[in-house]
Each structure stands twice: as C-alpha cells, then as structure tokens.
Image 1 (cartoon, one colour):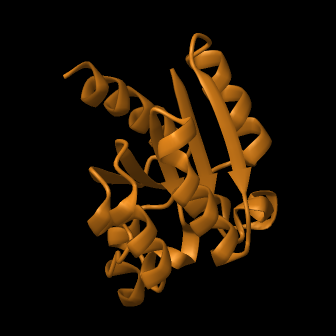
Image 2 (image 1 turned 45 degrees about the vertical axis):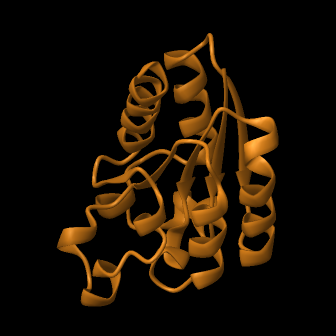
Length: 142
C-alpha cells in the first residue's frame, strides 16, 4: 500500500503559525506521527508552495500510488487547476485541513478542491491526517 500525502502553501511554516488554529506540530512531526501510527504503509510526503508542482504530483499519482491525501492550504479556496487535476485522478483521495474551517473567515468556506475528492476532514489538527488514512483504508477495502 502506497499513499501520497501532498501539502500546499505555508504548511512548511506551521511552527510559525497560530497554534490555536493549526496545532503544535510541524510537518516533520506530522510525518513521524503518521509513520508510527501506520508502519505497514509506505508514505510519500511532498510539500510545495507552487500550484503547478502540486498539479503535476496529482497528475502522476494514479500511476504510482493507491491513494492520495491532500492539504491544499489556501489553494483549497482558489485553485481551479488543482480541482481539475483531482477530477482526473482516479485513486481514492481525501482533503484534510488542520484548522476548523467552519470557524474561520467566510472566504475559507468555499472549498473548490474538496469537491473533487471522496470527502474532506477539517479541524482535528494532525489527527485530520490520521483520520484520512483510516478512511482511505476503509474505501480501499470496499
């Protein structure tokens, strides 16, 4: 089992962001947590602040992975390009967000990219990723 985990803009800066919204862990901490929680799964982690790089990774995902978990960050609300790439990607995919988007600014309520995933998880900090993996395993089992 191989799962690609993509992280979008500003997620490389978690240690500098509002901990009340994003939690206390940085991306390296989240990667370690995931690997420890699911040691039998092979994960590939990738972070980029560049929309086109994320699109390219999504476009290649079908050929190399069984599933995709994506935290597009701010691109969730703006990126038609990521939306379109997710639409073409046929493996199971779940969008995650560390912060509780329903409690955030109005512009964060429109999730363009989530519409082309199997579903999304928001508000559980690093546990959003763990929940997504659990659900991916359920989807693939069925």
